[in-house]
Image 1 (cartoon, rainbow, N blue to C red):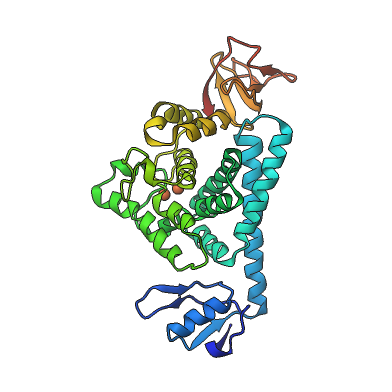
Image 2 (cartoon, rainbow, N blue to C red):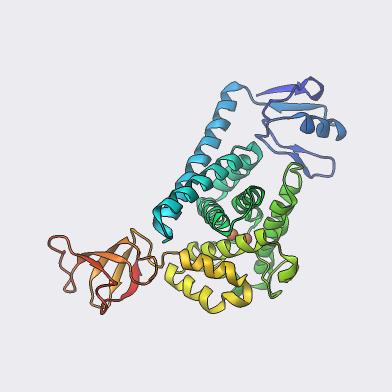
Length: 352
Ligand SMILES: [Fe+2]
Ligand SMILES: [Fe+2]
């Protein structure tokens, strides 16, 4: 790390520490790579000296971007192959490739990557929630026919939507925040405002992206927060991320207790129409695997089985490989059952 005069900065230097303005607000984050706009901003705010990283540290920030890119791509592949049960294989390949390219572009921005590092440092659960929501939102945005610009906003917004939770001081993982004391609930709900405030410093960022962060807990009937916006005041990008976010926060327990995937799909089918865009919700829920590949389930016949494949038209009738028979013995040989052919066999629960 070394100190240099702002007037000597030429662009391309990496900030070694956060730069605060006179009012206490953040001007630039640690890890930001300076450009001419940043330098002008520092001069306008009477900042004379800054600390920059030397080459060794610069390499480590690039490594961080690489790690986030790798994690994000892993989540997209996982969503496509394990969590979803969509149509033809060729469509899946195109969707996967497009989603991977979008996410690569988004995380290659050092401001975005720096935020993700903060999130990862704060909570591994939150980090993986952000990646899950971003990959699901990107995939569903592609299926919705969103433009390239919309997809970028959706992915970027989804990747950062809960950054404000890094400022929340109450526990929110695997906890029903709605039943918490009013002060705790308020503390939690403030994350949408603090997240928006963090991103406000990024002049390059689209307003739609910032709006996703501010509005992802709004609901079309006005029952959401922070502004009780209704359907007509919520752009499609926000509506899409709101569905993907709520799906994953219920499954992974962010602000809610954890639920099983099939319970969450059932919840959306029962309550979704009042709270979320109906068409988008139906489309997304149709593509979610009720029992994801790789999960272990219990059948009504008492067998323990592994999910090894999906039937696209019947989400509750996947293909299973029996691991244990009804009497608790390990299954001898390979017993595969396509539940569209075994009509009396039902999955009654998943086993963690
Ligand atoms: Fe949130
Ligand atoms: Fe979230």
